[in-house]
Image (cartoon, rainbow, N blue to C red; front, side):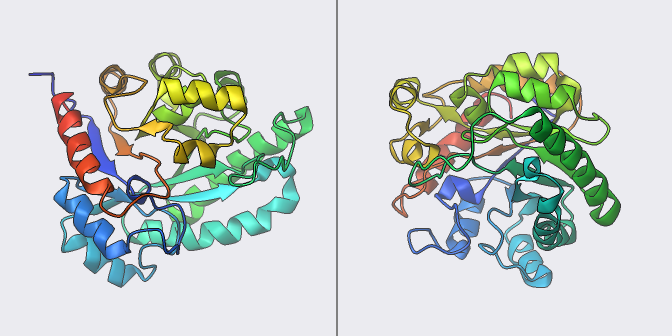
Length: 300
């Protein structure tokens, strides 16, 4: 038997049911997601895109509680690298998501940087590299966001390095961490996105362990990833090709990642997020069941 990973709290998310948007006819109804994530053996969930699950706190509390579920985090997207002009729109989004997140007794707000490339058309929206001034806007903006979210909602932000954003590669992630206050800003390390962008999750955990505040568990198919990189394929179409695959078929190996996280000796959420939008409605549950079984075999 593997050693028990008693500091790791495993969960799943709407993403693992092919949910990327608040309302989309190609996505399963939210009731089905809640029923199936429970059936698959998970205790924790994320809110997913705001508006997919009910946004009335009393109703959502009833829906998750009667299924034995709890909420670990909400999620926002923001483009703070663009400067102070982005603040008001960002804070308006935060107000909706963070209030619901707090009402569900969660403690984390996952923050994903805005995309530099359109997820569907591959149109280049912004240069993939930030200027020095934009890096300053980004790091100072995230610190301000962290302070105000903590002061107003009592939540900790965890910034999510993501493919096709300005925080993606090892170089960008380390630059971001080195330029931000560890007392304010930490990471949501997504093992799949980090591998997609060439990073080593175990190395990052071992090097910047005090900055790891949250985990997303996923794997990439290295053969499909090689094709995606060679063809300059944007993230959305890459997902449709199956670049994010069912564990344990891909990389990185999740056992060593979880073991490294356990050694940090802090309580960490490890939320399964297997991107597969869009997918057939009967596809997610069997994968979720097998993935939960696999994670138990790792001790989680």
